[in-house]
Length: 241
Ligand SMILES: [Zn+2]
Image 1 (cartoon, protein in one colour):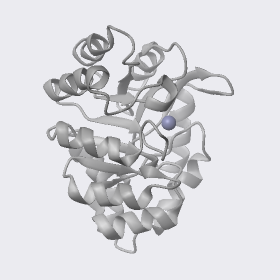
Image 2: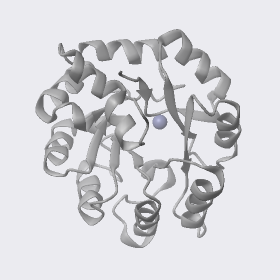
Image 3: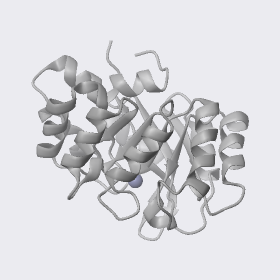
Image 4: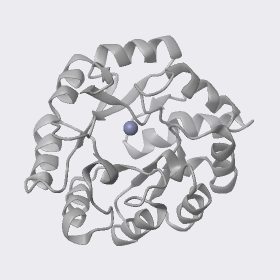
């Protein structure tokens, strides 16, 4: 049986946007989505508390990830605490908003080491920005081959072809489709196969239903579609599909 899992959502409040667990679950219900990965907004000072609250309310529907700013000296300890004490399942990083290079060894290696020890995936903002362009992902995927690394937005706007090339080369590098247009997503699915392309929405910044419906065009093959919209994510998170 196939399962639909949304790999990218924010919970909490930031300027211009807010979303609670109940808000997201209502969108999932009206769209036919079984489970959704949630993490904080990552601007400025942020905590993982709102994600914990949402997870406590909807433990069967929401999959909590922590987010940390590696400039904070306790960042790796916070990842460990969220996973060990709160049962979180992954890590979100945003190099552009927090001001560091994804491949900065001193800042970011400790977080990847922690994720490797804990056996959790990492999703990183991956538009074609300076701090987290595809070569930085490739560097980290090579440095930490056991860590499953998801590139959010799959290098859109300028770097999708480069993102696809690296994902083809590196077994632990995946492309996540939120906010990317269907032409680029279809190209990625055709080039990489369904096991390396993962659906996410980036709610609340999107029309939730549209971000899901666009995926119907990603492949004419139902088995391929099923893997992209949830099957592969279920494998990564060890969720029975
Ligand atoms: Zn996002």
